[in-house]
Length: 295
Length: 313
Picture 1 (spheres, rainbow over the protein chains, first blue to last red):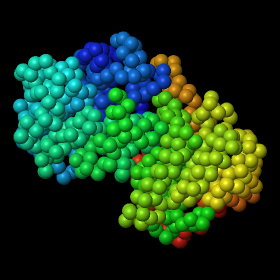
Picture 2: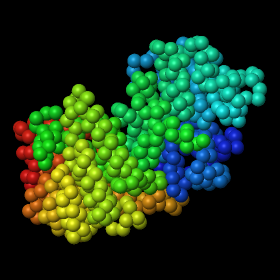
Picture 3: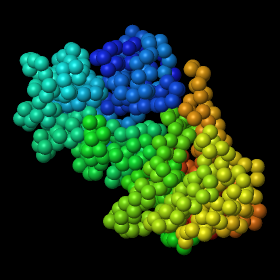
Picture 4: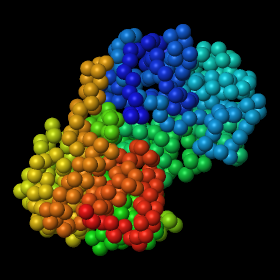
């Protein structure tokens, strides 16, 4: 009878990625596509969306991972938890990334054979983890790993996540930052957009995940005719499409339902992309004010 | 929209009797416009207060057998921002080929006392909204505000007449089902000059418990019940208002999910029908779908307007 099932279960594993970023794993059987997210709560006030960074079969069954950055009260509480502590999740929710050869209902016009698919996966800071599950699914679908290039953009070396994991898949990983101690192998001194530009349009699809401004900065370097999908983040409450908190302007696209993965045609119509977000109350907060507030 | 579904409500022409109630897809002009395009005859804003409110911490919703509990906590951007959204909505509707400017809006407001209701209503009066709805009945902020105002006949009457004094717009009173004297309160609201009644707000409230962690699921602990399981109660309360002789226009809602539910609500005595939680079960397209289902019922019965089945039992 209940279609939105909740799973309250122990944390199966916690991996420390950096001092501020940890991956939490759960043994749970869900229908998961790359790009989707779950809602997670500890029932102590607060329930937040987290992108799924991995979903794999293990000897203990399915293992779902979310990679979480410590940014506020809620995530600080999670960082005090241990393996075996209980949390509650629901999902997986939202739209997913395009995988060649799979059903593609959100954009039926786009097709590409796996062997011809040459994507760039661009993750800004903490936006990178969901692209790991994407890379795995692309390879499973038959895309040669040598066709896949990952740009991990961050403020500094420490912000460049998942390098070893991507390397294990055999994809090329480039860490881009404006502040690097060594600019050696697999490093690019500059922004995500500059790293993309350095590829000289030798790609036919761009996936991006990260802050609005990072994703928006890529657009001038994506040639006409090259498709892209961006993974969006907005304030979420219900995550099941009724409250309207995460709706974008002007057409009402809900990031929890039609998103978080949006196609080029959807992104081009957004008026809030890189301009403003709505807060918990529904009020508009512009990105310029957000940046000013941080200084 | 088809002629069988058109109606006139408090002097405003609506393309359909379906209403988007307060609390669902109504924070931004974009969501409300989308719901209008999909077939709602009237859209209601989020309940607006003097100041912006963040609402409760999550979880704010939980699905339960037969419906849903929610305790959003009256999050809203505040009356001034709400008025701007309505302006943007009217502007967007004017530029939309399908709506061609026809997008009636009901502005829901809430306050903790009469004076506050009056001051927000004065602002709402200057907005581009067509109606003002008084949310007298949210069950989810009792820790903060105490028992909903809609539990007292006297308070309901005083607030409605005070608001009527400061606005020319039709005033709709949204009532709580969680009282023992529902028809008396509906009668008091009518006598005080309300132009229409909207019923029912969510039922209960109720509790959902996570047994693994032995914790209430909702951060507010309790939440108002909505969805298919509340429909029989909503139908009964609308029906009882009519049996008690109330002739005031009624927006009936509570668990309306398909055309058959809408037909039942009209028969029970509602003039318009709200559709909220059904957005969860059938998506925002639920408005188009219920319009089609209602139309197909009317045609099967050889009726030329939904008003032929309105208030017939």
